[in-house]
Image 1 (cartoon, rainbow, N blue to C red):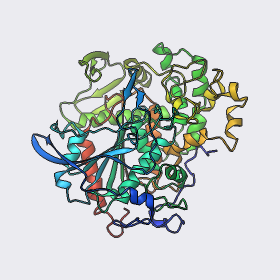
Image 2 (image 1 turned 45 degrees about the vertical axis):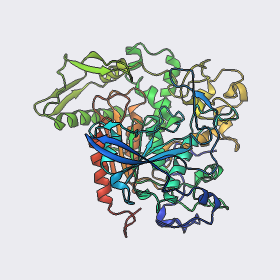
Image 3 (image 1 turned 60 degrees about the vertical axis):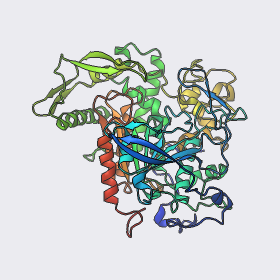
Image 4 (image 1 turned 90 degrees about the vertical axis):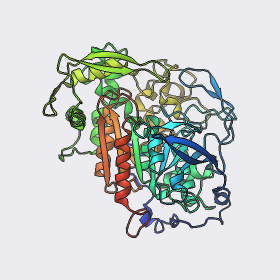
Length: 570
């Protein structure tokens, strides 16, 4: 049974105290692990690559491709037929043995012999869905370093890795659901451990891992960055044969990372419903947009938020407590900072006057772009001085909710609630592998009324509190193990560098989630650099600011100095 709603959980100590904690000494670069048969089986073959040629900014570049490296000794077999994505249907995967626990490693020619180059560690989840192995670098492709994070990473001489992982929606070879939480986090940690195990023979430095992800990938990046070396994952890592777990179940390798580059993270799932309903009900946004089909549920869920926010004990930059009472003011200040940053970035950047229109392009992959006009009735700016004069929060939230319909109530744990069984929300991320889904929040559990789904008071006869008080309960532990808020400020080794972006037009989660993440990171003494911002006029998306993000990575890498230099944290 997990302890939730706290920033003071006990976890494994950091690298400096690894040996003292009895978890084994963190090996130095180049240490051998041949004594461990599983580690020996995970040795990197430096000769097993294919050379491909790409073009970056018009210049050809040779890239070594180490294809589909299985980063665990005991991968979970997958069914050949997997769900086909939002459009429905199915898709056939060729690598059923390890296609969800593999990585593609791409080494640009400038890094062929460079063992100190940063490793750009890309996780490709969306919506916390399982991520089958992909190849972001393909032979003959042209990339622009101004718009492609792939091209920018290769041009900078970084080792680029595409990391697959299990998560929700995955169908195992035995018909079960082996991607239930915390599988995605465990797999990402296993991939980091593989890189550390083979650091002496692989190009790039495992002490300079920069994790990049968007949406569910942003959430996975965040929990990976927050929970470094936590002992709470050891049994899960051992089960899949991750590197650096000895025969006695002790950790001999680290899984902390250097930096996190996260976009619109869908995280803090145990409290995301209350944050969402509070934000979109406190100023009657749901009513104003005609999107309040369950007002009683919405009000009840929103009512849980103030107590949760207070329990975090977070502070604003001015030292005041961050609470529900001043949350809207805090969001307003972030919106103002975003707008003014946009105005100052380029003299050509303008915000339309009140009564003017925002011309916003939209359109999915492969579809022609469509431009829609939205009246600006919410923000007044002086373009001459790059200053925002006023923001009407009620109208701003309507502006956000008008461009994309608000999510259901509940927004993230909707399956089984009031008979809803068609929702694509994150409910199927939780529960045992033998069940399709399980409610993971108090309100949804207590209001599940779908008979026979094994979830809720109706099937178990237990309220949420009664159910989670049982020692055998796992669902609250699952929620805890994917929540970075439970590890930041604890004994885990939180990444020292964070770059977090959430668009000002993103209605997919509450702005509160990324703001809380920022405030928690700012209070963690291990964290050296937090660059959090609402990205001006961006929807739920990522990697739209490649030059800015890559410049930030360059700066933090330069400031950190040579990996494992004396007196520096690896």
